[in-house]
Length: 211
Length: 211
Image 1 (tube, each protein chain N blue to C red):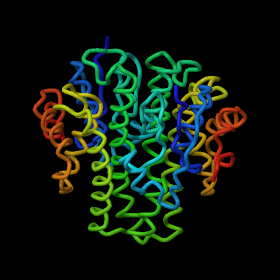
Image 2 (cartoon, each protein chain N blue to C red; image 1 turned 180 degrees about the vertical axis):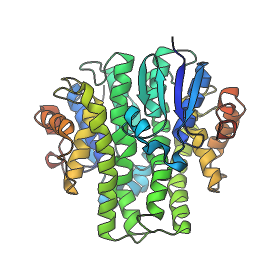
Image 3 (cartoon, rainbow over the protein chains, first blue to last red; image 1 turned 60 degrees about the vertical axis):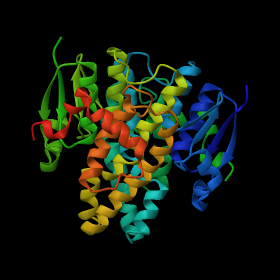
């Protein structure tokens, strides 16, 4: 079977998630950098493979998969151990809801294309753009802290990593770059700390990727 | 077993998705309106139930579930017929990727709280706000059209409704409210037309809800 190939960008939160998931599953993969800062996602050669022009995209088992959350579910189905989601339906729903709080309610408002539109087309000041960033992060993390509290252990759900942690870690990495205060989220910080010490998460860190 | 209870808002795209899914599964449910336009989601009584203060929230089987996509997966696990996602892993990944293109790449940029922030905190003009709306919808729908083409039938994937259609229909309803041109997306319009004629989708339409 061909090795998996990840179309990646070191600083993309969504690509970072998939790197973590692949590492947790122990799947070997090659990486091809799509430089979002230089518009690599808009090049015809990439658009031909991925009409949406976003990263990540994963070539695996003869398929071309997009959307980080969808990719993670695929990996969980095809490579069941270790599980990234609890087997119980209600526990699974809780973990997915936490992951989606990051993936739908925080990250889409703060990615590069959106921040560029604010500065460019809307002519928003650098300061107001950063405030926008912090506003949505703070709102989302506050909700996530409340959601996580009742069932958190060393990770966001119990003591093993799930897709919720996989979404959390890149979001907090990103939040720190924008100097978002994180003191109000002790449950999230504990999970982030546990995860950061985990080899699969550590190897996926942006500082350890080709840049 | 207690009847399911949906915390709902007629014009919320995410709540609209869950109404469609419940109808497709034939699950009876009560509805409680949380008036987002009047800030009902910020009231302490609702925040106590749902710290994130978003709709939808579904009370079912003794659980309180949030995030529309997570709720739909739960429903598919507990009430398997009719399936909302293909059983095959790669087909499932494709359908999820289409659903997430709406749920992560279009909808979060266009919901009420974001449009309010643009007009209020950022002081963006009504015109520029509408242009922002149309920009992200057009970008997302163009990608979705390309993704859908190869495997679409009467619906976005073959001839039965999936979570991709469940995400599409509320997004197109919303797009029409903002006069987004839809002529460039024949595959999406065909699926939307098929779905709109389906009783489960029709009964979930905002015009048929308490307002």
